[in-house]
Image (cartoon, rainbow, N blue to C red; front, side):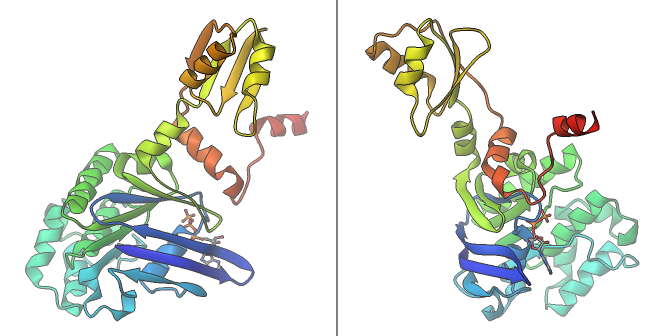
Length: 311
Ligand SMILES: Nc1ncnc2c1ncn2[C@@H]1O[C@H](COP(=O)(O)OP(=O)(O)OP(=O)(O)O)[C@@H](O)[C@H]1O
C-alpha cells in the first residue's frame, strides 16, 4: 500500500503538487492519470524518496521509503526508462543492479524471461527500441520481487502487442496481492491496464474513482429529448445540476445531468409528452477532458480561433 497524505511540493514559485492525498491499495492496478505537468512524476519521486515534500508525508507499506531495510524488495520503480548505460548489455545492466543490492544472479534470468527479453539479453541496451527499453526498465523494477510496483508512463512507446503484454503482467502482479501504481497522461492507455484511477490536475486531486465508474458517470447523463412541450420541460428540469440546451430543430433539447429514465418519469408526473429520449454516449476521453479542462497547463486555442485569426 502507498499512502500519500497532504503532500505539497514547490519548485521556486511553481507549485508542482498541491496538498495531495490518496492511497493506493494492493490487489488492483491503480492508474495515476493527469495532463502533462499535473505533478505525477514529482509525486512518484516523492514516494521513493528521490524528492522530499515541503509538507505532508508519504509512506510505502506503512513506512517512509528510506526507513525500509531492503527497499528494493518493498518498491520496484521505473521512473526514467532511458536511465540505462547505453553500452551495457541488458543482462549486465540488471546484473550490476542485482549485485549492488544483494539480489541473486538467477533472479536476473527470471526477470529477463518475465519481460520477454531473454533472447536479446546480450545486446547493448543502447540499441534497444523504445518498447524494449520499457521492458528492460520494468525488468529492473521487478528485480527485488517487490510488494509495490510503481511505473511512470510504462505504456508509452509500446505497440498494441506490448500493451496487451503489460496489461497481463500488471494484472498478474496485482492478483498476487501486490500494489501496482502506473502513471499516464492518456486515459485511453490507462483504461486498458488499470481498474482504479487517481486523477490529478495542477498538482491537486481531481478524482479517486474506478475506470468503470468514470465510464458510467460519463455515459447516460447526456440525453437528447424531443417533446412538443420543450419549453415547459425545460422549466421543469432546469436546476443547478441540470443543463438544458435547445436543439436547432424546434422541440429538441439536450439535457446534461439527468438519466433518461429520470427525465421520462418527471415528464410523466408533470403530464408532459415525450416523443424521444436518446442517451448520448460520452467517451472516456471526453469525460477525462471535461474533468481536467481547467487543470491543463498550456491551454490550446480551439482550432477555429486560428481560422478566425488568419482571416
Ligand atoms: N526539478 C524541477 N524543477 C522545476 N520545476 C519542476 C521540476 N520538476 C517538475 N517541475 C514542474 O512541476 C510541474 C509538475 O511536473 P511533473 O513532471 O511532476 O508532471 P507530470 O504530471 O509528471 O507531467 P508529464 O505527464 O508531462 O510527465 C510541472 O509544471 C513541471 O514543470
